[in-house]
Length: 325
Image 1 (spheres, rainbow, N blue to C red):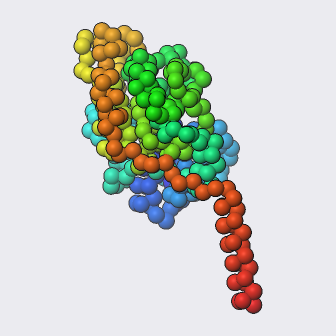
Image 2 (image 1 turned 135 degrees about the horizontal axis):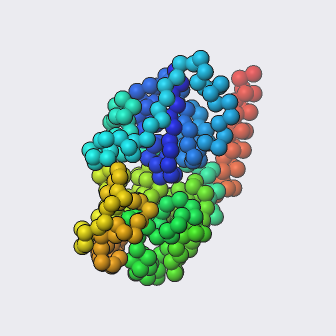
Image 3 (image 1 turned 180 degrees about the vertical axis):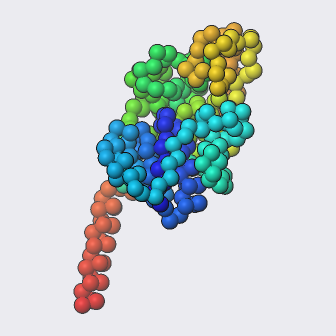
């Protein structure tokens, strides 16, 4: 049987979906798992995926994978499931149960091979230890550059940078259209390069966006700040999750439908007098200072050593073939 798993939404949702893929493959180990996503790079080298397709390249898909074949389609959006809207479980759990897949606590997974790690890591070598930040999320070229519902307030993020700038090379994951921070090294790279830099980092401060899912997939503890969404639905216990202060004013929610706040940061829904009321900046800085769970940077194998190892293996194979003859 062919199982077609379609993932709508952003890259963070695709990273979270890797946990669903493992659960599907556990329940259907002999069947072919085919993923359709906007971010196929998330699923590269994943042993639980048989094929992955980009939404932009689905030519003849019906003919090749559905017509007159034994197929199961898993394409519904968990964000509009009753259990998710009612906050009755983590995204991955709701996603699995929606398709009658047994959930066993699966976590996201990413697979970066040694060659990739060396290739990207050599591009981002740093004399200081790396501290990596993601302070803004959302789609490219969105109308609001800052979403109070999701993003770390710019003044708060800048104070964090000032607190650690002397001791760390602070790498800021952001697009060209997102708000810059003084004293940081902007990181505008492809997903697998960013994943490698996360692996290299000593400290990590994220919001509820793709980097926190990526860190979880790598098993790398991070500090994650939450405002509109909740870590119980989108987060992971391995992280230190800092939740925003309770609202200080009553918000206007006339446009709310399936969630309390619009993730784009609707200005009329803002439930504070000002952005300084959202987080305790001292708490964030102290949490990062006390963080003792940060993993060391990966040990990189020099390119020359890789080449030498390849030649050695080739020679051993040739010698073995001669002996066998």
